Every structure is written in structure tokens, then in C-alpha cells.
Length: 164
Length: 424
Image (cartoon, rainbow over all chains, first blue to last red; front, side):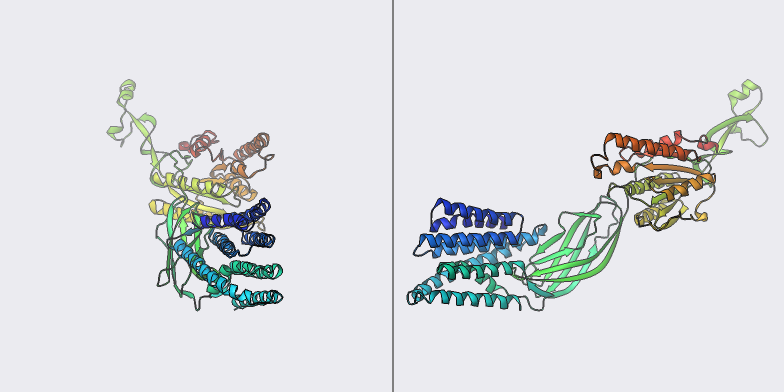
């Protein structure tokens, strides 16, 4: 079951950039990134899967930049969920590759993952509404600074959480 | 239990940072939406507080298994504050085969984790179970803590006894009430000769056809039947091949089979392990002795003996003069051969069974080393060695483990240098 979710994530990683910019080159780049992700899932190697996800995000960003699409929130949400599911599935197989999986483990794991996905969809919906209002009132020169501050805050929060 | 972030936590952190950089560089807010599921996953994760192993028990199902038998090892533990998945990682010895060497559990509400591990004994020996590691994850899998619990549990896995019906006969016999025909005459079932009737002879022993022909009473003489003392000498200096298909495994199985066969015919059987350890089991008879020998064979192991140059001195009390000594060896260590030739030179009744070490090592050899010509040369060298050993007065034969051991034992009898056993 976790395998299937990982494979679905790989397919999404290959296809989602085409939702933003449906071109052959984008599909090719997405397939390359997905292939690296699939390699990470199959080995299983979390490092390789992370590298694939980094490349996939880069492909998505470039597609977004080239397409100049007005709103790609749904595609971004799909990409975020795909990356999360991929890393989760790879980590699950890396941890329990040769272990006996007893009753209740899959249910507990997939339930946790499903809850995160549902919460993400809700959060993205709220953020999309809020950011639209926020974005309109913000000066173009300030946007990178706000994004940088947000990014730094996220990294600091992660560092605090992981070094507790 | 100390919890640390798992690799997934670092992977998610790297991606979130990367997305933040891309969002800044490309000036696109959508890229931050990709990070939302990842950030939420990170936010959901909290290290379990005060998680530890409350109680722990390690036990086997109480069965005394033999090679190839299955048994169950049970791990029963209770975790305090078990929130996420728990991985149980027992340290299993290489002797056991298992479908899974670890297991993942979603603990019960009271934190109890119980794993009945079905295991299979691959070869004989003492199985020592001791440490069990518990790795606990939080619900999101981003924090992992590890704890170790120890409880020594030992299990003796007995070697399988080879089925042996025909065993080498001893040249000298010992105590009465056995099956081996002694050179002495008396109440037995093996016919010896006919002689003239003498006062005190039983009427039932009169051979009437001969008496009528000779016109004088003649009686049949029989060999009295005695039991024998058999000492099994096991070479544990060297082990060739990989267990459970190594020379040591075949040696132990052959020793168990020989002990069983001799004890079945009321002989007294003893065992001496000659190698890194010099251990022995005194000769005795009966089913209890078979258990004793199996227990000794279970302990038999090959240990490093590189620093010991001389052959060990065998305990004299363990080697009665009339005992049949059966040496089981892959003929790979000169110290053991020195011991055996020394016994044969003393005029003792020695049978040597050379176990084919070159054949059991075949799967692990290079293509050149396993070439048929090379193998043929090895075989010739070993046959020459066995011939040389026979010149010391012992009965010796080669045993290829692929063949039944009885074929080798029959050839031992054929190569007897001092005539048939019951004339001794």
C-alpha cells in the first residue's frame, strides 16, 4: 500500500509541471526528476529521493517562471503532496524494508499521512485566500524581502524543532 | 530512551529551505504552497516524552530442537508512552534462519508489544540470545529513540544423527551381554567350531549328524557375545566449508549416528573432542549416554589454536586398551593426525574416517581451483594420505559427504589390516 502511494507520487512528480506549462521539454525534465525519485523509492534511499524532489521542484519553478501562469496554487499543492508522499514512502521502506509489518501498522501510518494531506489542502485553501488579499496590497520590491523573511522563519523553526 | 530527529526530518527541512530560496529567486508565492504539506508534517512532529521500556521478557517455547527444527522465540515488552510505531530488533545468532529479523508494531493502548518469532535452526550448536533493541518512532516518523534490553537465553540445538546400520566391528570386546562375537567360547549365537564331547557339556549342544558319522559324541562350540567400548574422536581443529554444510557439521552428524548405532547394540560409547578444547564424555551405555553425547556434540566448536603447536595429550582413563577408537577428521590438521597415528602405533584398534573437505569447500572455490583436474589431484593426495595412515595399522577410509556414510564404513571393513574383528 505504501508502495502504491510512492508510485502515485512519482507519477504526479512527472506530470504536475505539465499542468503549469504543457510542453514536451517540461515533461521530459519532469520524467528525469521522477526517474531519480523512483530510484530513491526502489533502492530505497532517502538521499536519492530528496535529490529527485529538489530537481522536481526546480523543474516546477522553471515551468512556473516560463509560463507566467496567473495562479498555479492547485498544481503547487499537488506537487507538495507528491513530494511529501514520496519522501514518506521512501523513508517507510528504508526503515522497515526487511521487517515483518504487523497488523495495524499500515493503518496507523497511512492514517497519519492522510490526515496531513487533508490538513494541507485546508491550509493551502486558507493561505490562498489570505495571500491573494495580502499580495495585492504589497509593493513588488518588498515581496522578495517578505518571502526571504518567511523562508528564514521556517528554517529557524525547523532548526529549533530538530535540535530540541 | 533519547529521541533524535530522523533522516526524514532533515530531508523535509532541506526541501522547505530550497522552496523558500526558489520562491525568493523566482518571486513566485506558489512555490511556498508546495512547502505547506512539508511544514505541516514538521509541525505535527513532537518527540515522545518519557518513553521507555517498562517491562521486558525474552523466552523460547521450551522445546529442545535439533538441526532443521523450528522453534519460537517470544519477545514481550511494555513501553511507557508509546505513541507511534515500534520496531523490535533482536540480535539473532547466525545459526538461526528467520523470514524477518525485525518487526514493526503499532503498540496496543497499554504499550504492550509481543512478537512470537518463528525461527529455524540451521545447524547444531548453542544458540545464545541476549540483546533486543527497541526503536520507537513518533506518529509522523520524524523522531526516533532507541533502547536496549538484555536477557540471556540459551538453547542447545542438537545435531541430526545419520542413519547407520552397519558399524565397524571392534577387534577386542569388553563387558558381557553384547552383540559382538568374542574370540572366547561360550553361550553365544555365532558358530565357532565342532569338538569332541567332554564331561559337563550340555546335551543340546551335541551335533548329532557329526557324532553319528564319527561314532563319537561331538558338540558345537559358539563364540560368546560381548559388548565393546567405542571412543569417538572428533576433530575440531579445523572446519572446512560453510555451515551447515561444513566438515564440522558432517563430523558431528556422523558422530551422533555412530553413537546411536553402537549404543543400540548395548556397547559403551565415549566421546573426545580434540581441538581448541579437549573435552570428553566418559564411556557408558544406554539412552541417557546418547543424550550426554548429543549434549557434548552440541558444544563442539572450532576455536583458534594457531599458537598451540603440539598435539594435546588425551586422558588415559578415557582410552581403555580394548576400546575401538573411531576418529572423524577432514585430514586438514597435522596435530589431530599425530594423535591418531600415536594411538595406532600403540597397537590400539583405530578406525579413521576422512571427511571430504575438498568437496564441501567446492561451492566457495574459484573456477580455477575447482577445475576437475585440480580436484582429481586433491583426491589422489588424500587417498595417498589414507594409504599412509593404513600403514600405521589403522583401518581408514574416505567419506564423501555426498555419499551415504555406510559405504565408507563398509570400505573401512574391507581395508581391515588385521583380519575380521571377531577373531580378535
